[in-house]
Image (cartoon, rainbow, N blue to C red; front, side, top):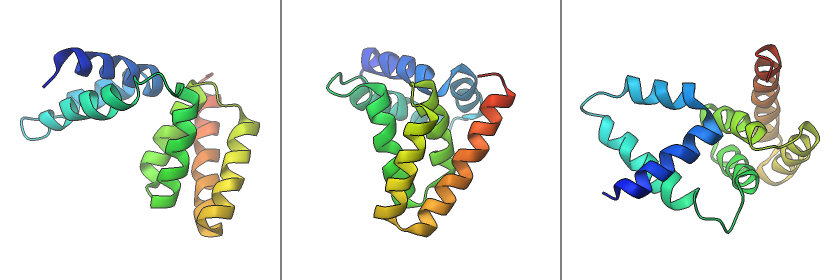
Length: 128
């Protein structure tokens, strides 16, 4: 494994998802799942998210579309929070969700709006 890439990946993961989320994932890992956390940091966050060809906001938009299309609503919610941390405005999020609805189908759009609304309400309650 590439420790430099893994470290860079963990840094961007913390930037996008927040320290609390990453600390929880790390603290909940056991001997069985800990290597997967390393893979996430190195491969997903390190190789992909540290590539400067796309900025973090663009990557967040891509993730929202892919996760909605795949019906991965738990991860979708995590990445709605990340997209907001990466500077996505509510109007940009709404436009993305409407496009998701058109291209992925109304049921995916309904669920995406439901999850995104809950996340936005949580972030407002937390003062973010």
